[in-house]
Picture (cartoon, rainbow, N blue to C red):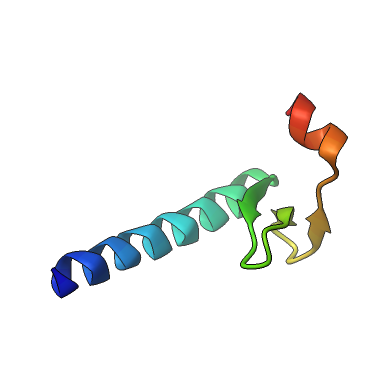
Length: 59
């Protein structure tokens, strides 16, 4: 069970890394939820922008 959890954590991390690479290659951004529960956009430049409620409902 421990190995399954570790494998899943690794897969999630690799998926996030791949999304960042794709965003950089395409000049876009990724969206994710921080540990604090805030939804943010992270641009390929490293800039992180908090999303507001209106953006969450329209994207």
